[in-house]
Amino acid sequence: MYKEGGDKLYIGIEIFDKEIKKETYIEKNIIQSYFENCKFIEVNFIDCIFEDIIFENSTINLTKFNGCKFDNVKFKNCEIIGVNFSELSKFILDFSLEGTLVKYCTFIKLDLKKLKFIRNIIEETSFEECNMKEIIMENNKFKEVYFKNCDMRKGNFKSCSNLQVNPLNNNLKNAIFSLDSGILILKELGIKIEN
Image (cartoon, rainbow, N blue to C red; front, side):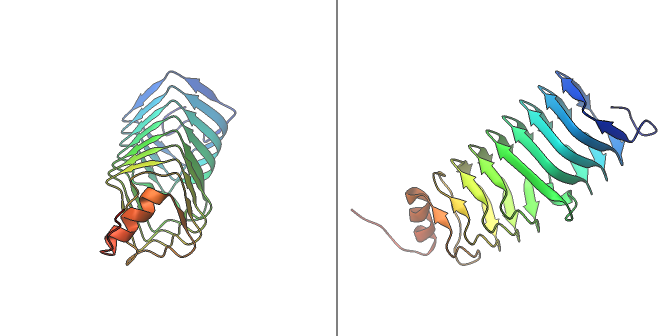
């Protein structure tokens, strides 16, 4: 990719083993592209479109996606640290996380309905006022993850561990939880379970 002033459209690019640090990309359209073993450190993407993209075994650290659109973006076996997903465009938002470490990230007022988060480690991250209806969150490991005012109805959280959700400030109707997460939810209500 080129810095501001270069081409605006990138189709079918494949980038391997590259580190991009403290660069800014404005109004770039990146389509049907693949990034493997790349590092994006303190990169600023502004009003960019990411369509049919795979990030694999890559690190996205303190990177900003101001006004960016994600359409079928897949993060596989990545590390995503310190990203504020709330900066993404609210109009096109379709991405998945698989086998990825998500740490110190923020999701506020996002429509995450029916998205897939599979086999991730999610730590010290917050979800606030998100539409998480019918989200698929399977086999995720949570540590100090905060949910507030989220609509989690019909969400699938089975096989997740250490998921703590306050049922008083989140809508959990018809959501599916693992047994250990269910016990943690009951604990939030002050209910004790004994053998």
